[in-house]
Amino acid sequence: MVKVFERIVYDQLYHYLNEIDLLSQHQSGFRSLYSTVTALIEATDNYNWSLNIDRGFIDAVVFLGLKKAFDAVGHTTLLSKLPAYGISRVPQNNGSALICITSDKSDCSDLQG
Image (cartoon, rainbow, N blue to C red; front, side, top):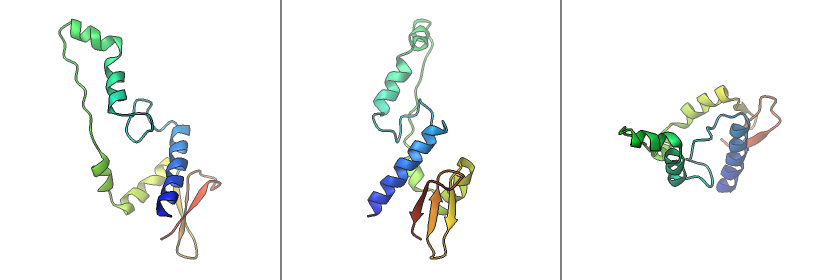
C-alpha cells in the first residue's frame, strides 16, 4: 500500500513541478526515458563541443549521483522546504495530514502520520 501511495504522490508532484517549469529540461535524473547516456549525448551533440575540440580547448562533463545524498535528508528538513515550491502540509484532526500540491488545496493527498 505504501508503494502505491508513494507512486501517486510522485506522479502528482512530478506533473506539478513540470507544470511550473521547476525541473530543467536538461535534467536527466529521476525522469523516465532519461539517463546518463541521454545527458552525455545532449552534452556532446552540440556545435560548441566540436568547435572547442577543434580549437584545442578541453570540454568536461561532471555527473553527480545524488540518490544517497537525497536519502540522507531528514523528513523534517524536507517538509520545511516544500512550501517555497507551493506544496503545503495541512494537519488533520485525526493526526494525519494532507499534502497539497497547489495553493488552492484542490489537489491534496492523504498522508498518514
